[in-house]
Image (cartoon, rainbow, N blue to C red; front, side, top):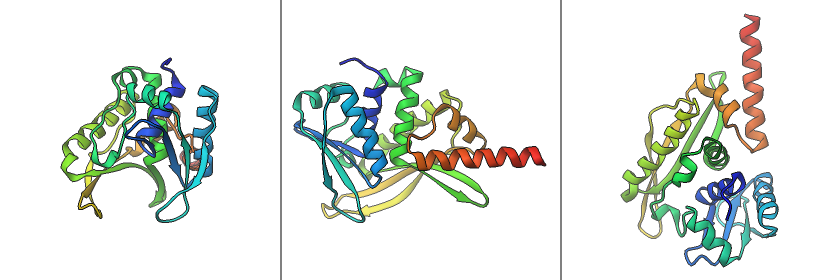
Amino acid sequence: MEKDIDVVKIISFLTFDGHLMKDLSGFYFCSKQRETLKIFENLMYTKFKLSGRLEKGTGHGESYKLRFYNTLLSKALYSLGAPKGNKVLTTFSIPAWIKNNDAFCKAYLSTAFDCEGSIWKESNRFCIRFGIFKNEELLSSTLAFIADLKDMLNRLGVQTTQSWIMKGNFRKDAITTKGVYFKINQDSLPIFAENIGFSDTFKNNRLISWLGHNKLSSTGS
């Protein structure tokens, strides 16, 4: 399989809000946002001419799964670095072939922030935060994974805060989770918008509109 931007985005989707089945019989992408599901669907069709099956998700709130059954493709994606099985309970890393290519880094990070990033207004300014939850027994490997993400951002000119750990949940399977989070520094938001941004229209429009307003306010003063 050719390593290109589309494949990078697919691997990033599967690393965060997606799921590659442990037996590699297939995979799915889960989201509450129909637009984000459409992005994944278009990627799969453009790259592999595959159409998925849309299902209603389970759990809290309304969500959807776009499911694909294709063992050959699943094995290929796994060989390129997509994690398989329950990601909360397993360690994984960012493939070196992605980390060592700036264009691939941008695509991977943009998709990652579409899935696990949040943007909100606080004290008349917008904040961007990223975070994932993992088994607390895997906390050291999770911190290493987050450190790799931050290193990629830094290489692209985006500075971040120190990471912090949040209390997670005690699951039905007796696993306790912890969340690891960081924010984008305020003075790096324009660089983040220019070099990475969001594919999610709502998040990206919110960021661009605030940056435009902030620029106008600074010029007016």
